[in-house]
Each structure stands twice: as structure tokens, then as C-alpha cells.
Amino acid sequence: MNKNPQQTTLLMHLSLLCALLLTLLPWPSQLTIWQPHWLALLIAYWSLYTDDSRVMYVAFAYGLLLDVLMGSLLGKHGMSLVALSFLVTKSAKQLRMTSFWQLLIMVLVWLFNDIVIRAAIDWISFRYQPELLDLLPLLTAAVIWPWLKYLMDRCQTSLRTS
Amino acid sequence: MDNLKSNQRLTQSPLFKFLMLEFICIVLMISDKNNQLAQPIRNTLSLAAVPLLKLVEWPQDLYQVAQLAISRQAQLIQENNELKEQLLDARLKAQQNISLVAENDRLRDMLKATQTSPLTTSVAFVSNINQTQKSQHVVIDQGSADGLFEGQAVLNLDGVIGQVDVLGQHYAHVILITDRSHAIPIEILRTGMRTLAYGNGSEVLLSEIPTSADIRSGDVLVTSGFGNRFPRGLQLAAINAISVSADRTFINATATPYAQLDRLTEVFLIWPNEDEALVDE
Image (tube, rainbow over all chains, first blue to last red; front, side, top):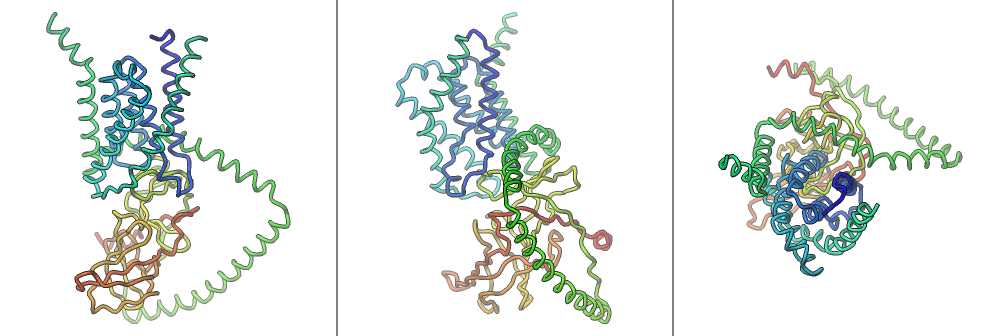
């Protein structure tokens, strides 16, 4: 599908690093609860648009890195991101054909699943009581996903034509 | 040959990879939770994380430098004067303190009580880094390479702020006293009553105080030194509200921490006294 897979891989890593930085950037406290899970969004995108399931290893590595940065239980984000990546890769071929709205809803379902997994791990490790507020990032993710997809598509096409 | 191929197909299949990676994650989580086996992995990964932290901090540092360069001299002079006044004030208090310390020592001598020796401390700076975690953490710029250890007490000038929770090689996560999963042994300064203070998200909560206990709004909470994590007598919070539990068996009190936990810049780390450690052994 792609002429220069090396450059695509480079783009993937660059975008994932950007996602990590976006997660780390300090936001005003009112906005923090709205912050989407950037890394999960990008992992979903790359699982959807690369053909091999190697993205799962990438998801695992970046998940662990995020765990270390956030000081959470080692493997928490790793687990949720690998699960997300697996769900996407399994049906990537069909999903690439679906309409915009269907895809958006699917993305929200994956992110919801991601939130549920993390809440479950938190509950097991320190009896965290989930709140409805935890679902707010889904709304922002729904707004951001189309733009993110458009941006990454443009980047990929420009790589392919150059 | 056929067998080998099917083996290959198995290891190539997404399901196999998924199960393998999830298994690794579960093993990591269990080892991290229970007995710190995962610390070497965390240390190695933290080396990769440091450049990212630096990259986030760099524009903020730049902004501060620029602000300093642009700020006018008059402002600086004013600030300097204010700081001098503060220093005078602090010196005056320190002088009063000296006589109090001497008096206290004499009294302790008479009582043959153990001496409290000064604490070993070090200063660390708080990184302005977003924490989307459910728990309340701040990141400080010192780690296991600087001799920090897990459970170490962290203060700032106003009072106790928390303890070291997760260690990296060159940075550490400090869990704040207001975190829901944090508890700290405290003592009410006025009455000497000892209890535990739990975090409740924005304040600290004292639950399960007997209704007969003498407790008022405005009471000062200090660390009681139980559990050997926090040294005794560090100020923590002031009680702001008291309520009786629904079944009228206990009093619940909430207290506001002295330290402003949402705008921390520098913190102090405390090492336990070696003399005390010897006594414990």
C-alpha cells in the first residue's frame, strides 16, 4: 500500500511522541478533565492504517513509557493500549471501508473500552471509585478525531507523493 | 515442515501477540504492585522519559528567563525590598526560636527524654507537568540517583505536602496528602489526640473520631511520627469543618492543608536521622 514504509514508520513514531508531549503539557485545571487520551487516539489511527499487527508492539512500548511518565502502575496504559490496538487491527480492513460516522462511533467505543480497562486496573490497585466525569474525554475525542484523521492522512499522502 | 509453518502462523497471528503482550503487562503490574521487582525496568525506561520531560519544561524555562530579562528594574528593587523585610521577620522569629529551643532542651534534660536532632533535608524543584492520573501526583526533579527512597516525606515551607510514591532515576512522583489513597498519622496539636488523616481529593479528612473527643474548627494538625515515615511535629493542616456522621457514632472533620498544593514550586525532602535509625535497630 505504501511506497516508503520506512518514512511511514518515522511519521508514526514522531506523531506518537507528539501525543506523549501533548499529554505532558500542563493545562489549566478546568480543562484537564476534558483532555482526550492523545496516545490512544493515535494508536487507534495507526492500527487502522498500517497493515501489519506490529503496531501492537509499538502500542505496548509507548504505553509503558506513558506509565513511567505518569507514575502509574507499570503496564496499566500498556495493557489498555495493546487491547485497543488489537481490537482495531482485527477489523481494520472492514473499518477502512465504513462511513465517517460509523468510524467515529467505533473510535468512541474503543476509547470507552480503554477507559473501562484503566478504571478497572485502578479499582483493583487502589480501590478507585469511577466517576461519570471520567467519560468527558470521550466528547473531546469525538471532536478531535476527524481533524486528527485528516491531518495524519494529509501527512501520509504528502509522504507518498514526495 | 508443515508443523513449523503452523507454528509460525501462530506466532504471527494478532491474537497470539495480543495475549502475549497482555500477559507481560499483567506480570509487570503484579510485580510492580507487590514487591518492587519492576523497579529496574522502571529505572531503564525513566532514562528514555527524561528527554521528554525536559522538552516539556524547556519552553517554560525560556519564558521565565525572558520574563526576568524584560522585567523592569523598579519592580526588581521593590521585590528585593519585600524579600529583605521577609528575611528580617524570619530572623526575628529564629532568634525567639533559639531561646525556646534552649529552654526545651533543658526541660527534656530534666525529664531525661530523648533529644530531637535536626533533620537532614534537600531541596527539589517541582516540574510543571500535567498529570492526567486519577491520583494526585507532582513530579520533582530528583530521583533514586540523588538518594531518594520510596515513602520519603516531602514538605514545603508551609507544611507537609506528601511522600515519594514512584521513583525514577532522575525524577520522582510525589503523592499528595489530599490524594484519596493517601493516609497520614497525625496528632491534634491542642489536645494531643492521635488519629489518621485521609485525603479526599481537595482536603484532608479525619473520620472515625469518637463523639466525646475535644475537637474544634481551627485546630492545627501536626504529624504524629507514627509509622516512622514522617518525623514528628510537622504542621499539616487546619480543621475547617466538623460534622457528625449519619448514624451519630463518629465525628468527621475536614482540614485545609497549609501548603497550596496546586501551586508548588520547590519542596524539601527529609531523610530520617541516622541516630534514630540506630535506636530502632
